[in-house]
Length: 264
Ligand SMILES: CC(=O)OC[C@H](N)C(=O)O
Image 1: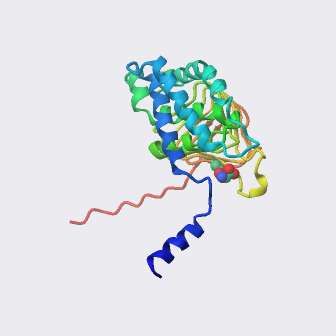
Image 2 (image 1 turned 60 degrees about the vertical axis):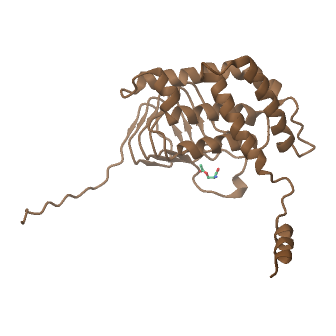
Image 3 (image 1 turned 180 degrees about the vertical axis):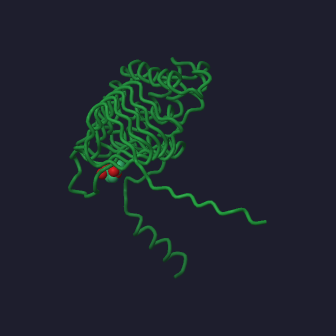
């Protein structure tokens, strides 16, 4: 195949007229500016809010290509909710500093905890998601996912003072509901019992009630699965049914250790 034919061929197969990676890049720089505007003391709020509004306009132009989904009011609705979101995020940061014996300062939480970063970007993206703003919330949480290994779908509903410790390899599905003061550790999955396209728009992921702790690598599946309040789910537990309030759930593997006599 000559060069002209290759170009023609590629052009024929490049058939998504709205697929512009500029949207992804602009969303990532908008997300960075937003995070710094909310938390970094040297990032002036007034001028950065103006810049954010301009950057958001560009996102609207790139993301709102469906005529039946007008997006013009989304920024106005979002910006008024920023103080409330910040209040919630400060509660998350406090929960981390109060719960984690390894944390040395609140500044460390904001700058060094991937769990805090992932929750921050999730909470900001969630507000855009509930306004029906297409694609950008997913690009925001995927950006956080890429940086932290924590995949929180912007559709999930998460209450106050949420803490993900050692955050990596965590998956929180689109229809998960997490109430207040929940702590989870690395490798936790809040997922669907099985995956089928026909389940779109149904509750597929679990509900976690207040004050639940879920230790590392536990997997909790199913839209009807409810983990009752004050429960503790041990590491590596595999749960596909509801757990009553105040329960402790252990996974008990059989570990065999065979020690041979030392032969030199
Ligand atoms: C987290 C999870 O179970 O994902 C499976 C699928 N994407 C769904 O949303 O059902």
